[in-house]
Length: 171
Image (cartoon, rainbow, N blue to C red):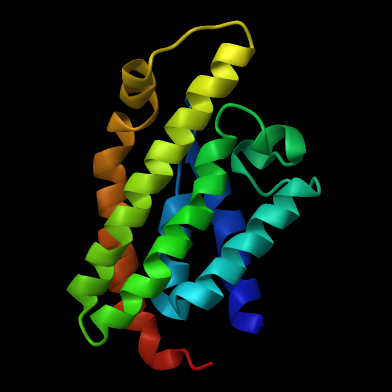
């Protein structure tokens, strides 16, 4: 429980480290990657759930010190909810990757891709409901493409952190 709580707190803190843009650049994905690598799929999923629930009840744990259901059902909420998908995809894949940090890191990529897809579909739907119109391609260009390289860097950093901390973490 303590490890899950600590990783949920890390997600909160990392979401506050942001560059404000329509879809903010944050260190949130780094914390999710690190939680999954350090804790594994099941406990990582629990830490993601705790983080999202803290935000859902209104605590300011999302980027820009925001929180609440409104934030989750807003245009970028699908990317936050997509962290569940990332954890659910990683969970069965991690068992095939025992002992290989590269394989564990690569196991996060399909979940990240699905997080991007879910978040982008969500973004398009919410944007359309608010009276605007944006194509899926336009949403990808605005909400995913600028994040691919930074997220790859965050993934590499999470692998390094996991390798460094794993020897000190026992649960």
